[in-house]
Image (cartoon, rainbow, N blue to C red; front, top):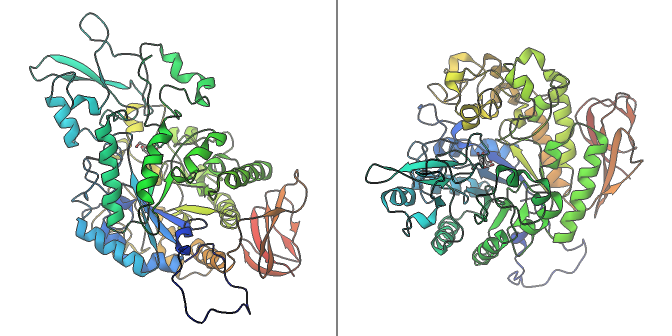
Length: 580
Ligand code: GLC
């Protein structure tokens, strides 16, 4: 496993009888782990229903082991109506029957563990689904009842309560309140939902909500899960006192970093994670947790603190252009932050919410670059014509950025399919789209389906209609060009993106060392150059963001994303070099 631990120096005396290691070095496994995100419905389908499942994952454990990742993070696989791809959870302590059973989960976890791969699951505490038993009970109960208090119900405004309690909007578009029908058939109260209307927000001032999530953390930890990814970690605590304020309140930029925004990143949210940390620390090794918190960089530290979740996603790299200056700033700032909290840094270039980075870096100029599907928004809205993407340039830059990311101290999060160099699917017929952002925000957001299309495992059409994903179709349509990215084709080609990821991950393990880097060269250069010291000497990492070939330090080339000629690194490439 890839973790940072102090090893005895060569020649140090070895104690005659091994003592149990009370400090438990494996507790640090997460610090520099390469974590592979699986979007279960789109990974591998074992039963031919077009939906990926847990047995599909189990069947691909050898693939994950050969890839060389230290852990997998599974997006939700819980029972769900899929109003938001599974982030609308009906029951936190079960498996969606379409994806398998709890026994299948145990089998999958055992197979992953046997291959030395840790298991991280997704916890969605901000909201349940509207089919969760608590929400059904709330609907069946009277206003003011204990069942309603687990959620955020309010009376409407207007003479008959016909207006929502306020004008706040949902992240997925449209209003953030939905009116219910009371038991006697009359129009009733309204409930609050930050996301889709099928995702009612929980009331985190209710002790039962706290207890239930501790139970869920124990449930999965007892089953051997190694860690948790915490969805919308900055959203749980809300101040609904001023809810009759106008819409402007939730858009006031100054409130975002104050800890007093009514909906986001409120200071008291950390009391929840202090409680969780105590439970996670009851286990040996302690269970890890990583916060998905889209907060300002200097407020991230609290989520990542050892008294809190322990780690938080840094999405800065994902939001940066392919630009030396931006990458350097992001890296410097985040390493300093990590040093201050004691957490390790996290790095992400792609996930299930954004346009794949091999496409982002090859988009026509002026397509915009944002997050949550907004990156390349104009291009997607125009119908996402693949002919407009410079896929070769995008892929070349993506490999360069990935090689840079994998050389950084801290943990790297990879998203399924990026190891194939997979491009975003821009063209998906309206009738096939699934993402609620598309439906709630027509014409403004196309949504995130384009990065969630099931993986191609086999290039030959004779292998089934879904490129080996399953035996009968895929729940989102795969374009014909997916065959060019199929696993079997890439396995047979030593120049493929997959071959590059395998080499890079293997090298990364070999080179593990202290979480430190030293910049070499000028800050305003188009070329980033840093050194990573290890006990065996240092290795250097050079990324050429510019147009002209750049000189490399002399030494052994450990990895290069493009051919090095005459000691020079071509444009849009990264090399790792052992020096001295
Ligand atoms: C997170 C997830 C996203 C989901 C949202 C609501 O941002 O990553 O996919 O839609 O939370 O749960």
